[in-house]
Length: 428
Image 1 (tube, one colour):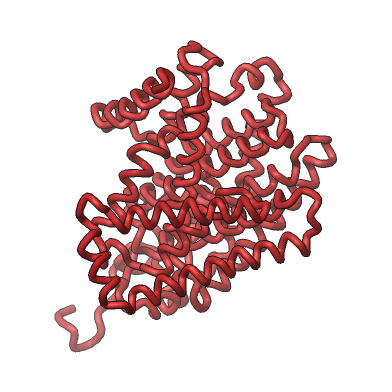
Image 2 (cartoon, rainbow, N blue to C red):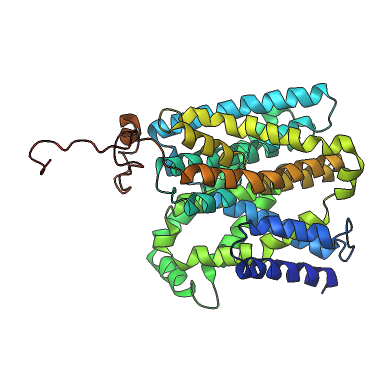
């Protein structure tokens, strides 16, 4: 057992306890885990230096984090007009990323395309709790935010993997390899559906699911590892396989908390209870804070990267302007620009491949930390204020989801006066 790993586990256990003792401190646990990693790491106190054991657990944590992110992507959200709006927002994000890449190339920054891809993703795991706290998950602003964030996450992971696949492999070859991976994903999906039609096999799985065998969890871990290995074998990053595994699990069971209530809890226990915190703390251990402080030019990248996040992920919120008020659009832009886990993954991959300078990587991660600190708080403040009455377009947009309770943020016109009841509806 590595002594450093024990210290990392102590930090992972101590952060939620600290937040629980001081509930007024509204900070994401992931952020404190990264900061704690910086403090105990080589940059500050020097208590822990990442060894092979810690790095292996961190890699598993990264894979499981991407798996859980993939499992948050509900493909049912991209139906009809909502899908078209999300597609427009993705195109705008790609255009913004292209502008960022062009500027970075002109400035001679290494790994410019990788940085551009890094800005495409939104931290779903951080955005969903913010929307929940604001009571906005069931409102159009919440559903549009989650749909846009999910699409950005998918595009970012695919582009990252395709862009880095195979080294000298031409683009057509990379796309063919991606098609092979997706084909394997489809075969696995069909096999699972076929197994569900087998009464005997279904009965065995149901009987073993909540015993010491934990068969659903074991099969899921096998799926994550198998697809990650398949992605690596085809020249992609392992995170693509892990992310696709999450999407497949969600596609096969769109509402797992209703069909198998304990199953998501068990997966989150493995991920957020063990592996993911180790990844966050290790990210802090490897963060080149000294390089960021010693080089003013690298420190100056932090506000520039924050502006880039707002350009690439915040501005595309205008795609939802027909269905949201200006205040809600502003909140959506801030939430979509909230990003940290994917930035951590990109920096780790970029530095391992020699594509990113450590100081630039530290600037990217610091910008992500600031986005997590500032953007959700600002979005909460905006969503807490009363919004204008919804338009007819907004009501019809969500009419296709009969299970969603109709919502109106105001009780009358924008002036605050009540509308006159129709004749026969009661006393005036």
